[in-house]
Image (cartoon, rainbow, N blue to C red; front, top):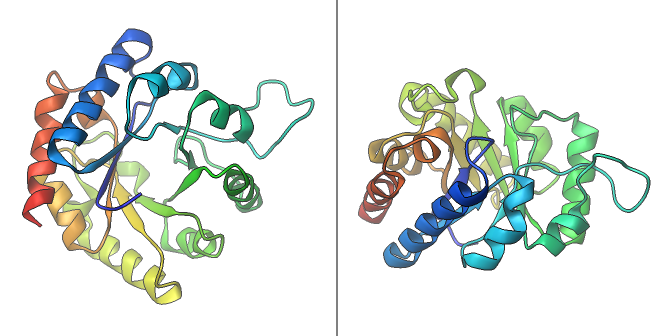
Length: 223
C-alpha cells in the first residue's frame, strides 16, 4: 500500500449495517480524494464489507495458528478467504508476547496479508522491526480515545521512534495512533516522519465521519 495511509479501526463500536455504511463512506472519500484509506471492521463483517468496497479491509487481530483444533481462534487462511487484505497485530487492546507477534507476522506473510504491528514503546518497536512487518504503528495506550493526539502531545516521542527505527532499518514504515482526531493531528504526524495514522473513535463515533475524513485528507494533500 502506498503511503500516506489512514487505517481506521472500527473496534466494536459498529457492526452489521452501520459498519457497512461507514465502510462505504470511507471507500467514497478514498476514491474522491485519492488518498489511501484502509478499514478494520469486526471479524463478522469482513466478508460482507470486502465484497462491497474497493479499499483494503483489515482484520483487527490474528492468532498464531493455522489449520487444526483451535476452537475460538482466528486463522490467517480464514481471514484471507473472507476477503481481508491485511491484519492489525498486537494492538494495545489485544497484546501479544514477542514470540506470538513473530509467529503471526510469519503466518500473515505466508497468506500475503499486509501486517500492521502495534507498539507502545520504543523498545518493543525495535523488537518488532526485526520481524519486518509492512508497518509499525506507534501508540500510547494512555492517549487512546482521549482526543489528545500523540503527534501533538508527545511529538518528540514520535519523532524519536521514527528516527531510531529508520536507523535500525531504512525500510521501516511507521504509523502513529492514539487521540488522532483533527486534520492538524494528521499533518503533524506526517511532519514527524510517519507515513500515516491509525485512528478509531474520532471517525467511528463521529456524527459525521465523512466530514472528519475529508478534514484529514485535506491536511494530507497539503503536505
